[in-house]
Amino acid sequence: MRRPKSTPGVARLIGLLSCTLAAAQRPATPATVTLFEGARLIAGDGGAPIENSAFLVEGTRFARVGRRGEIQTPAGAARVDLSGKTVIPALVDAHSHIGYMRNMTSGAQNYTRDNILDHMRRMRQAAFPITTVAGALASVQELVPRHTVLVKTWVDDRGGTVKCMAPELYTAIIDEAHRHNVRVAVHATGLQDAKKLLRANVNVFAYMRSVFLRHMLRRARGCVRSGVAGDAAGTSAHGWPAATSRLQTGSRRCR
Image 1 (spheres, rainbow, N blue to C red):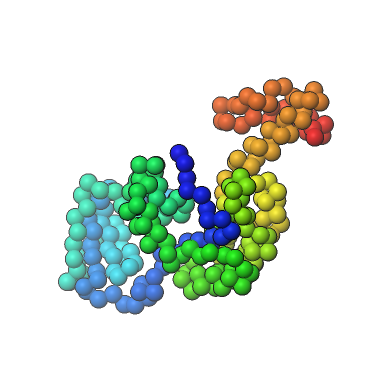
Image 2: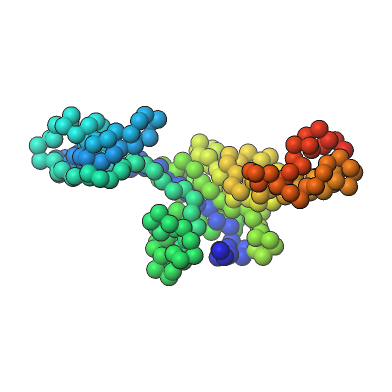
């Protein structure tokens, strides 16, 4: 499956917004109160799912959660029957590629003009081109008032086909985000970039397995030449290099 390439020379910054809305701070009126009944409810608190549930929503907040018949319907509240459905509040897909996701599916079959435009419209208030330090700082500062809890950026040259984000740019993003108690995630696939990002105090790495595998395979080939390990080209049942366990005892002799 081919993915669209990033725009050369332009780094991207994406803010993931929390579900807390300003409207939730205002008192709910009867017209904004709704009782949902009958669904299988997964509350997300580690407890068992609630079958035949009932939950009362006031404005944008869950006010009460229980079983059908346990929650009294306030005067003037709307009622919605969700029998046969499952409800998972606040489940957010924080990582998807533009055009590939549609409902619960991901693949090239979804990569249509309409789906791409729909995703771009959804992201237009949360994605920023970053080309200068000043722009990096301003973009983070714009996201903070929106109750942003995490920003994600991209440090990858796509195999030398695009310009990679410069260290001074991602360092500015990380420092400014941390100044506002916001965490930073990064898409990075290069080992040297990963080391620099780690020194810059990034919080979350994406695609680090590919970085680790390439690094371990290079070390394994060095060990093969020195006679320490066996065939490094094979993989275990989990996809890791077959020689990894033997490298633990012979790594000092690896290049």
